[in-house]
Image 1 (cartoon, rainbow, N blue to C red):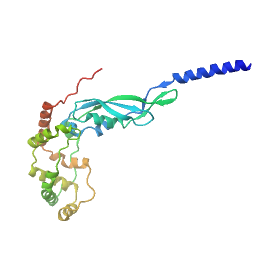
Image 2 (image 1 turned 45 degrees about the vertical axis):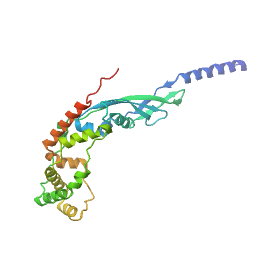
Image 3 (image 1 turned 60 degrees about the horizontal axis):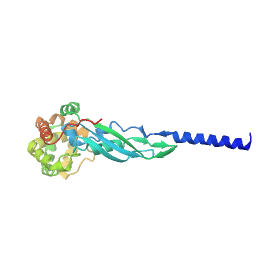
Image 4 (image 1 turned 30 degrees about the vertical axis):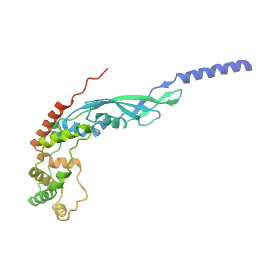
Length: 261
C-alpha cells in the first residue's frame, strides 16, 4: 500500500471513529433510585399527624456520578405542609449517573415526582403494639406519678406542638386551635405519664430520679414509649386530632391538585 493510500485510509478511519464518539450520548439515569422508605422517614410530621397525603415534583442537576445537586421544588401539593422540602431530602438518597456526550460528562437536569402517604389515625393506633410487660407495682406507679407531678409545670412550659413542615405563617392560628381543642389535662398527664414511667423503669431508678433528679442514662426509644402509653391514649386526644384536621382543612387545602400531564 502506498503512503498516499495509507494516509487516506487512516483519515477515513479516524473520521469514522470521531463520528461514532460524537453520536454516543446517554442521558442521566439512576444508578440507585431514591430510597422508597425515605418517604416515611421524611414525611412532614404535622401532615402525618393529621393524616394528609401529598406529593412534590423536584428538579435537580447532575454533572458527575453521585447524589443530585441544586435541587429545587417545581410543584408541591397540598402546599404549605412541607412536602417540597421533604421531596428534596428523598431525592438526595438516590445516586445518579450523569449525561455523557462523546464519553464526557455534561451537566443536565433530572426531575421526579415523590409521593408521600399518611396513615389514618385508626391504622396507626392499630399497628402500635400494646404493652404486655409486667404490671408495675403500686409503689412504682406512685413514684412515677410523683416525678410527673413534680415536673408537670416545666413539662407544660416546655411543651411545643409538633408543626414540622407547616408553613410558619400558619403556626399562630394552628397553635391557637390546638390550645382550644386539646387543652392540657394535668390529672390525665400525671396518671398516663406516671404509669408509663413505672412500666419503663425499675423502682430503684424511679426513686433515684425522684430523690436527686438523676436519670437512668438509658432512655427508652420512641417505639418503647409509644408501646408503654398506647393503651392510655385517650379517645379525647384522638377526637381532638380529628377536629383539628377538619378545622385545618376548612381553612387551607388538604387535597392534592390534579396532575398536569
